[in-house]
Image 1 (cartoon, rainbow, N blue to C red):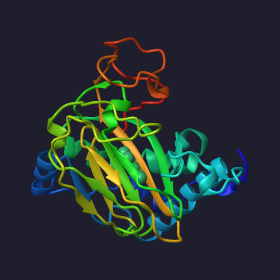
Image 2: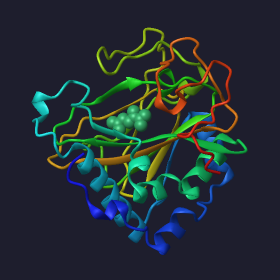
Image 3: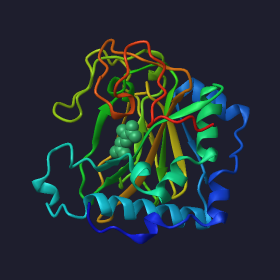
Length: 275
Ligand SMILES: O=C(O)CCC(=O)C(=O)O
């Protein structure tokens, strides 16, 4: 690690902590919309000082992880040209942990999925560099050995993310078709041949807005055609009680469930119950 920034180890101000743990009220229409489409946009989940502070600490964490890498975009792999991906930041940086563990966010995940409780799967910052290529279409659950339909990602825009800056695009209703072909966005991106759905919903966001999408919803992201970084932070949650699966196309190797056997309830040091 390089470029450690002391702010990553300072105590989170009380007012920010309070914001991270203040419920965000959803209405029934929003829950129905999520259940129907497999994704939803929610405005102002972060605002004011909490937004500024979150952006500052998450960017400091990304810089700490990647500051040593002086390669230009062209020198990077195709996958790395889609984004700088920094996962498990909350375990290295206490300031980021307070954000990732926020009950405000976990509460939304729980209510959208209509489950009793959620656990953390992992966090990851996804910073798409100026000129960064698109993020290829995929389904997250094929990367995760979780035997549950209830997995969800919160994708937080830390800066305004208009269409030209790499906003997310979702294929509505695809959360109802199960885990399809594994799409290897690292090495061999392509649309699965079984994908009959082609209509995308493009979702530009203002800083502090989020999208939540099901781990089963096919999605992708636009290229970043601007000369500024697209700064986004994700937190991934799953239903409390879900079990580890080594079936079908799912990737088996995942730090959040090291040591588990098929059928074990996922409850490891990296997957605490958040709400
Ligand atoms: O941020 C991106 O470019 C893609 C994000 C994504 O695929 C995800 O959060 O599941």
